[in-house]
Amino acid sequence: MSMNARAGAKMALSGLAAAPLASPACAEAIGQPHPWQLGLQPQVTEIGERINSLHNGLLVIITLITVFVLALILYTLFRFHEARNPVPSRTTHNTFLEIVWTIVPVMILVGIAIPSFSLLRFKLVPPPADIVMKATGSQWLWTYDYPKDQGGGFTIVSKMLDEKERGELIAKGTSPEDAPRLLAVDNEVVLPVGKIIKVEVTSTDVIHGFNLPAFGVKVNAIPGRNNEVWFKVDTEGLYYGQCTQICGDQHSEMPLAFHIVSPERYSEWLKEAKAKFASNGASHARVADARPLAP
Ligand SMILES: [Cu+2]
Image 1 (tube, helix red, strand yellow):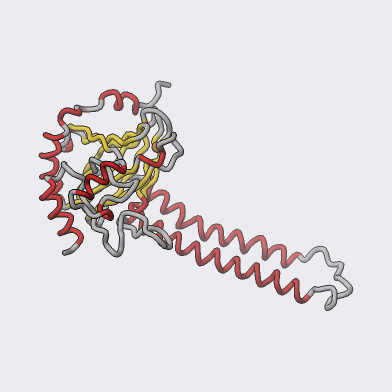
Image 2: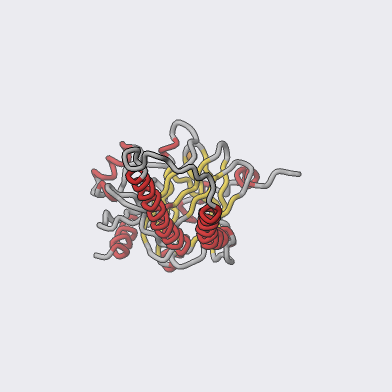
């Protein structure tokens, strides 16, 4: 069964908002790191793909420079060894060489800066969003607000499953890969595929890190500030991230879990989630926290 079909079947079984929506322990292991992984996680957004290609391009440039410098060092060691070159040259300046070794690195850096700044701009200037939501970091969990005008009007509190809870889930038939240690949570964020999603990120206590590696998204969650990220995910699936600021003794226990589903399934989920999370209400206190400080 395909990944999406599997996830879909499990969703139907679990009543969507109930148990954690399982991701397949698929061979390609999207949405989470895997043993012996090389490079970045497979990227599922345009931002992520552009980051990946910049990263790969830089790797080529760095490798060429390193090999070139190593070759120069080895040549110097060999050619100007005392035995081969008993009388050292007294030359101290070479204008041509000095111009070359100034201009060439400048050109390399400018060559890197152009795609780098264009990517930064792409990342930092969000296009008009289809869905806006808010993520609030707290020691040590994430709270997600789905605004009323987007069909939401409820708040999800998302907490990591501890070993006991994971054990119970696995005992009920979930495979261990579908409830990854330190990543699986009780309530996942559910969002539609192919839509531009903007997330406003803040914190209630200390600085946390909102980081979703497969989306190419990473921003600090800072108390009293509202940072924003955007993404448009091309592939359905369950994507995990972890807090990337050392925020306290359970820093490693506040994962992010984003389940990307079809728009139809998303609207079904909205209905169920509204009923399920109604008792959480809207997190007024956190809205106030996120307001910019008065001048
Ligand atoms: Cu944190």
